[in-house]
Length: 171
Image (tube, rainbow, N blue to C red; front, side, top):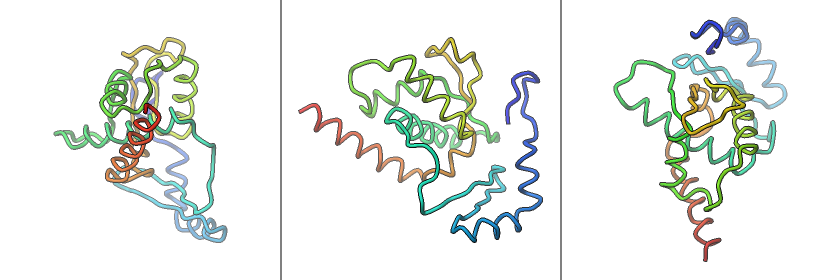
């Protein structure tokens, strides 16, 4: 996890505790029909369930999640040996326009802050700049946990569905 005070990545203590007791945790959650999954390459341990867990996401949060996953994959495919990806809000806005995922009205600063807060809560991103001054130049760290959500092909299919819905609404 990125530590703003130290301006570097630090070891995530809860991850280390889960890693140490992974077999026990996996069996414990299995009783409740919750699967614990681990990706050692990216240092991720998460839970998956057939029953919905967590918050209902807004359309803007869903769009951001999908596009951040797409940007993460694009940047990881470039010659990079880092598991951390940095993007700006401007890059996300460009993808929104390219894929026509938002109507012509602008995104309100309040909705944007809520979206960034939710994504941060679920450890998908970290905002490098101050949250009270959100601009297109605001930098985000996209964590590898984004890989636990969807496969790249599923992201493309969902984006296509969003585009179809937007086109129908425009008619």
